[in-house]
Length: 447
Image (cartoon, rainbow, N blue to C red; front, side, top):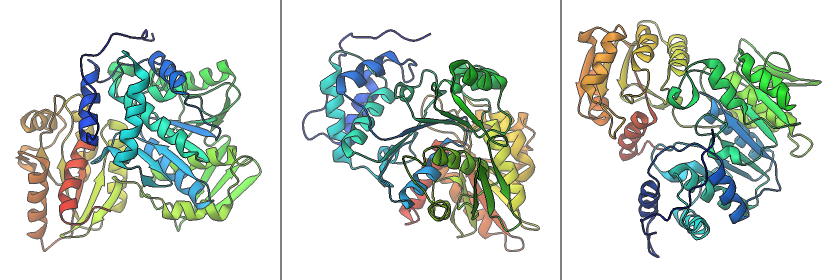
């Protein structure tokens, strides 16, 4: 059920001239009484008021996992082909600016503040959620930049997500798993149906999940979308050296191993390539540009190696059972003989912590855990209880006040293990990785 337009004046004053980006974000956070308020009517009303529209192709990407990687691959390939790109993703890890990229570069504080001012001028007394307000600003900023292609990552679900108020030319649903059950349902079928609502009549509707639920397939047929399924309408064949062949219709490209690590990245690349091929008549891309994009693409914390000092240290934002299963596979496939794996781990309390631990525990030898800040963060003690439920032995767990402390302890432990190779995996939440990145930034390791 959608939410009716709310037009009650908000009691908060907009920031004065000269206010910083952080001051604007604090104002936006307090503007609406709900951090998440699903519905499209406020967005549709505001998009009309602000005159937001795009002459270029728009691609929308949903999925429980794989959204960010899929977006990053498309963006980099189109940039390699010479096109001007605009990409919105969420959440951010350290800076809000990470959510809005123009030609691969974060937009400036000044550009965001100006766009927030445009939203404020247009909204009148309408209350907007954080995601609606910031999303409108990013959309207006993108419109003013006149890109050749716009890429929009869905934040939550699909049907009632704010970004679904923009009609896409191509839509992608990546991997479908169980997450955000309070909003989307507690089965893959229910969740897939929510995500399938980003599909549009007569337009390419891509699914890169190899096991698409019948609800997604049925909805695409019901609305007359052009459904394109992995392993039916497009495919990837991996070669022993990591390169792969992408096929779609009469097209066949031989492509290099994706720069993004993990077997799941072949499926993510397949979905991205299917969208690129679907738009070849408007955005011509060569096989060489696709190869260059796959080689050069970067995205933070998707099984990413950030340093080798004092040992190989990996970041992964996986925070639900499906992502945990993929992480476990990647850890297993990349483990050296005799290597110990240390986990720096923190997870929000409304996530399925016991199941995530259950799936990853066989690949982890020792855990360095901490609670996370905020109302959803939870304590280290509560997290430890869930870990014990997930089958981890109490002696394998050490608790710390913050992720920075847990990371420091894991690195000390690694330095004291000269007899065997050791690596560290930092995972469990965007918040966990963000706090670790703050530590690495102080050491000059942030790219």
